[in-house]
Image 1 (spheres, rainbow, N blue to C red):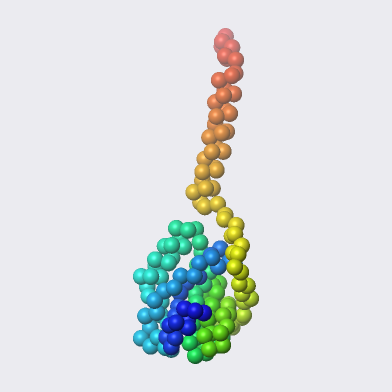
Image 2 (image 1 turned 135 degrees about the horizontal axis):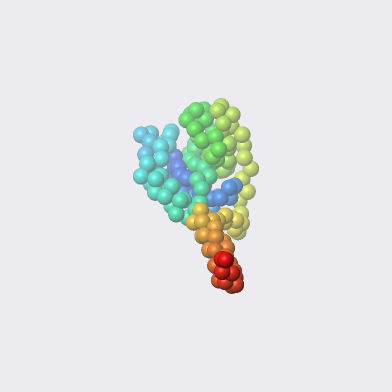
Length: 162
Ligand SMILES: [Zn+2]
């Protein structure tokens, strides 16, 4: 909200990172729209950097946000028409109504999603990375091999073949 008010009458925009339904990082991206008072276009290089940051921190892109300097937090017809991320959140900072709202936009349907603000962010459960899973599989395989080797070396020598 503070950022949206600072930038008014221009719109701000950015990416929301996190895990599942918990937003843990808000990454502002420069708005490079020709008419920033009426539209937003995320600057591609900064957007790619944000994606890389998400990847490095094993975070997901949860959604995108932008502001409405002179309107409320409802998606505009343009917002709905140009949205192509049915599984991501559209968060709108309505500077005029001082409201922040989250939406799930599928086709022409915009469904409100409840936003809960918290000063003490819930620690997101961090699932194992692929590297972590591979490390566990490798150590299990090595343990089995070690048991096999030990049991084979403990076997009595084979009787001589007549
Ligand atoms: Zn909008």
